[in-house]
Image (tube, rainbow, N blue to C red; front, side, top):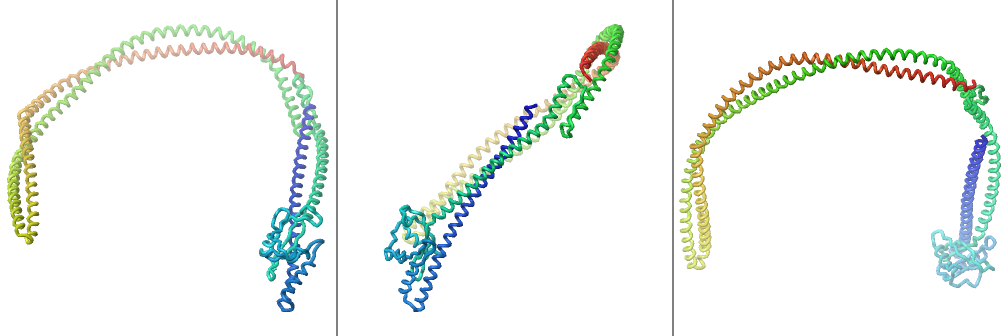
Amino acid sequence: MKKVRYKLIMLTVFISLVTAIIISVTITFRNIQTNNNLLKIQKENLNNDYDERIKEQVEIAISMIDAINEKAKNGEITIDEAKKQSADLLRKLKFGEDGYFWADNIDGTNIVLLGSETEGTNRLDTKDSTGKYLIKEIIENGKKEGGGYTDYWFPKSGETEASLKRGYSKLYTPYNWIIGTGNYIDNIDEVILEREYILKKDIQVGIIINVFLVIGALIVAVILSVITSKQLTNPLIKIKDFALRLSGYDFSNPIHIRSKDEFGQTAEALNEAQKNVKTLVSLIIDESQNIGASSEELSATVEELFSKIVIIDEAVESITSAIQESGAVTEEISASIEEVDSSINVLSGKSMDGSNISNAAKERALAVKDNSNKAIEETREVYNEKKEKMEKAIEAVMVVESIKVMADTIGNIADQTNLLALNAAIEAARAGEQGKGFAVVADEVRKLAEQSSNAVGNIQETILKVQYAFKNSIEAGSEILEFINSNVNMQLDAYGETGAKYYDDSEFVSQMSDEIAAMSEEITATVGQVSEAVQSMAESSQESSEKAEDIRESMRETTKAIEQIAKTAQSQAELAQKLNEMVQKFNI
């Protein structure tokens, strides 16, 4: 149980430690992030303040120069005097410890620079320590709307190493001067570094405080875990001891846990379970003795019942044998009757088939007779119709001959027209220029005559083909009509007579089949009555045999059940003995 206690303590300490570390790391990270943001904001504010201040100084200087320029506008002084006074003013103006002003023309010529030798020189090519053309950039930024800022690197007075400097310049339009000022801003970085150092110190102090808080929290967690684990493990120890007593069959003493939590509820449930088991064991001790006595009485009764069942089974077996012999004889009779009935059924079926076939033959004979009569009539109609058409075709041949005569006449006319056109062309040629029109007409007439002659030739050729086709058709039709008249009519008459004879024979066979079928049905009815009687007797024998067999089966099952009861009674007696021995181990 110490292991569980230590596990609870270690788990509590681990959870507390992890939670404290997560909280401390989160707080520290947030503080660092907040400080970085704060430093960034402070740096931006300082830079903005510096930008506003130098811009304000330049605008003040420009306003003072503007006042001087107003005098020049009013005629109080000349413009050159105004520029000179403005330049002197810029040389004298200072702000802060070392803040000063300068002025350059937009072409790069210096106007004011602390009265140094640089004044009056062009310094567009002046570079800072990084190579930047700072004057060009100052002028360009000054020309912008509202002026502009320029960053550049320049050594301080008495120093060789360059420092970052930031200036503001703005164009004064009346003079075309770029007026500016600036100062070193490395002091802003120094302020930021100083504040960053202070914030880091604060973070370190916060980390140390967090470490002490974590240590204190761990100490409190250990104390609480020890107290809590003791409160949890003491009831578990009692429950463990109670379980060990139960495993040793000791149900004499209950478990005592005063708490009202789950451990107390578990103890009450275990005590109730122990009470129920004690009651059950007492009941088993009493009943096991009664079971032993009852099992002995049941064994004696089973033995007596088993001997009587054996006698009943022998009697039932004798009855079953006699019934089975009777059933065998009945089955032989039934089989013979079934053979007779089967033969009669076959005969009846054959007679019915013969009747059906004869009826079908009658119908086919009647159909043959009708079809032959119909064929004779249709053949005669076809013969008469074709003969009439053949005569009309012969008349049509005469018409074609007339067309041939007319075509010959048209051909002769075309030949004569062609000769006339040729003569007309000759006469037109003799007439010279006056006969040209007539020659054209004669030529067209000659062409039409030639076309007519060609068409007549085609018509004559076609007429010859038509005459040949008509001749072949008339000859073939005449031969077909002759064949129908001499052979087909005779064969159709013989076909009709055969159909009539076929019908008479089918009628005779149908009557014979009907009489055989009627006789077969009477015999089948008689045999059926005998078969039903024999079948009834066989069913009665079978039913008696089945009931006898059911009785034997029931007796067998009863015997098995009695044997099982005997075994169960013996097992109960043995179980009661073992159960009695087992419950004697319990201390209740």
